[in-house]
Length: 410
Image 1 (cartoon, helix red, strand yellow):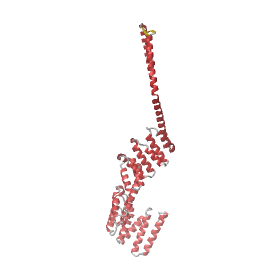
Image 2 (tube, rainbow, N blue to C red):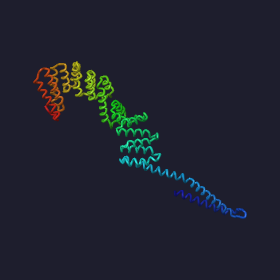
Image 3 (cartoon, rainbow, N blue to C red):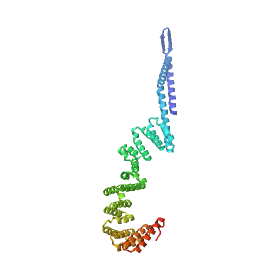
């Protein structure tokens, strides 16, 4: 700015010098006659008056233009004032919303919505504030105000999120169905869809959504809860098919591989198949899962898979015994299968060995109770009433002490 001022000052001095030089050189006169008047002046004065007249005319034109533009300038000023007020209101609405002052947030959003630029953003903020106040009708009115095309995905996703929070699963799915296919495959949209299907108890869809979400890198923060949800969904799918064997098998094969290999899910499937007298299918499921996950509950369920021919199961269990020679649950299973085959001597030997090994562990109280009960039934079959009564008493005592919270019993 200082350099510019110096340049202007130098220009003015140069102009003054030039005017002085021209004034000293000129000797002409200007004569203006308008009867009855006669005006005689020097050419220098005429030049000055001409310049002054031009400047005055220019200033007059600028003044007239300014006066004519006054209404438009005033309107633009008011518009800028309203826009600034709307921006301040939008900022206040965001601040109040995240601070939990939802009534103030909605009021500020109403002020911000007066500006066309802020209308859609203010509508979403107002909808969120009204939702937090449980004013769902007013929330929907706010959402209807977000009409700009670039805000539609945000409106639909926000609507779905608020519907799912209000336990309106059908409304959430309806909002998600209006989204473009590419947007509906995003993690946030699929997460909302998962919660909606869970609320509606659409368990097959829950399994499909979890499978789709497994492809997202953002899965790990929710991995534990989703694994539990997947297990619950798989169990419900099996329970819904429990009245018809073919449907139950189809439901089992529709489960994710991780659920088919989960011992608890396999135990439930085997139990339901056994109830439908599909022992071979139940046996196959248990054998496949035991090949991956050795589990005591599945071993005990394996006894019920014998049907009318326990011998193949005995042979398979004896093959397992080579890998697990001192597993009390496996020995108990062998004892139960031999008991069904009426191999009384082998059954008694396996059960007594299982009972002896289980007595060494503090966590095998229920196994000891079941082994005593199995031995009691075996002695009843053999007509040995006294030994049967003794094992029944031991089984009842083990069970009662377990229920009372005393695991360390002989």
